[in-house]
Amino acid sequence: MASIINDRKASEIFQGQALLYRHLYAFIDSMCLKWIVELDIPNIINKHGQPITLQELVSILQVPPTKIDKVHSIIRYMAHNGFFEIVRIHDDNKEAYALTAASELLVKGTGICLAPTVECFLDPTLSSIYHQLKKWIYEEHLTLFEVSFGTQFWEFLNKNPSYNKSFNEAMASDSQLINLALRDCNLVFEGLEYIVDVGGGIGTTAKFISQAFPHLKCIVFDRPQVVENLSGNNNLTYVAGDMFKSIPEADAVLLKWIFHNWTDKDCRKILENCKEAISNNGKRGKVIIIDVVINEKQEEHKVTELKLLMDVNMACVNGRERTEEEWKKLFIEAGFKDYKISPLTGYLSLIEIYP
Image (cartoon, rainbow, N blue to C red; front, side, top):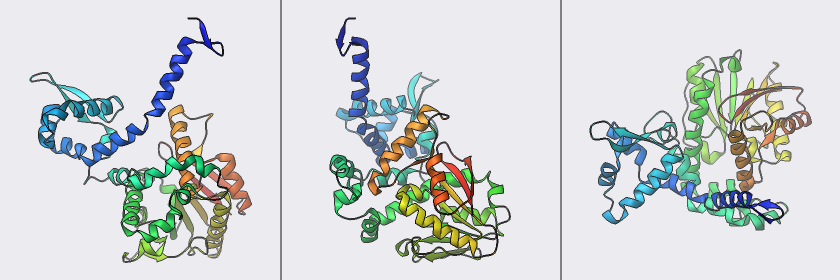
């Protein structure tokens, strides 16, 4: 075809249009995911015990006849995107929908369920802040959350118990996947007697560690509003405090998904407090970080895409995801001398740093 715009072929322009429209309507992906969780569809299919037909599903959901084709549209779209598998039932060759690895993660009552994460972050109040990206860019120090609500995210949680509860449940559900990955990380905890999980929430990961390593004493360290009324056991305790002021002494400090919430300046302060916490016991302690390490040159495109998307997402608190060089710079500036990065989950890495 002849050139049309800036010497581009019409085929290139059409591809550009398709990409533009894909992003224009990308918010529908999130809304369809929310729809799946709100209607409890993964649990319905799981309880059904076998792939479910459209007629069986709409019957259980009591969908009006006029909306059955719309249910089909959404289910078909989400199947195309990997949330359901379309199969044929042999008896009458009817089309039916089965769970995939993604939708199995939304089945409630199982060992690992990410439905609370979906419910939390797709709450209209929280997701609406991204309409303020333009205004946020011109505010020198304010976070996207402050631009939208006039307060920091953490202060908002402190003042709104229902959102605080929802956020803690979301973080606990995500920690279940981290626990799955940590099963193969015995060497990381070898030789340790005490470990403090900074920002450990309600203790999902600390409970796993304390059960997997009964000799290891675990401290869950978080905001007072998070750990109040939580009780531990012989090798698990809860301590309230502020990681910017001090961190309980231990052989190791664990921080999972903490640093991406904060600026470099804040991260250096946290690291300095970590260094002090592991240096007072007379042993060569370490800091264990579970977080994103961006590595565009060596990882798959889809993995990098997710990491870069998470980097944009952290605008809500002025945080960021980091490359290895950016991590290294933080470690050196905080007084650490050595570090080691290992893969952990599909997009999270495990970083061990030493004073």
